[in-house]
Amino acid sequence: LKTEKEYTILFADDSAIARKQITQTLDHLGIKYIQNINGANAWIQLDKMATRCEEEGTDIMDEIQLVLTDVEMPEMDGYVLTQKIKSDPRMKHLPVIMHSSLTAAANQNMGKNVGADAYVPKFQPQELAETLEEFFMKGAV
Image (cartoon, rainbow, N blue to C red):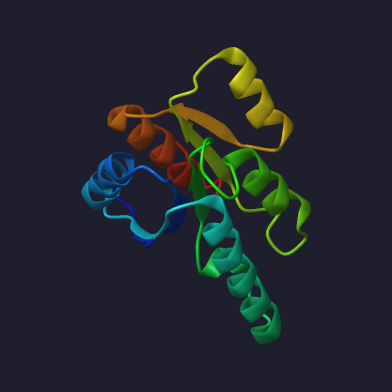
């Protein structure tokens, strides 16, 4: 990713294999990341980050510019995580990309219904890279 700005994303996936593929893609693009093993952990981290930013008078987008989440995870799935992010005034402007092996139209529609900004099939590193570049290059974040 050829840009002056440094980007950091927070991602959540319970699969070690998927996390490895995501980190390889992000490393290749030069994007920093904060990884979580499920939606509940991601939410706790986002909530703490948003609270700290609120206290400091900064925007959460100064810390992270995007959330990437799996759909199927224990404790809190990606749909619930996305819905919580999009309904929280401190972080509703954060772009959320769903990254899942559930690629049926119904799953993608459910993602859109909870506020996901994009839906990318899992284990398609090229498509993930292109989607991230699109968000960052278009100034969406």
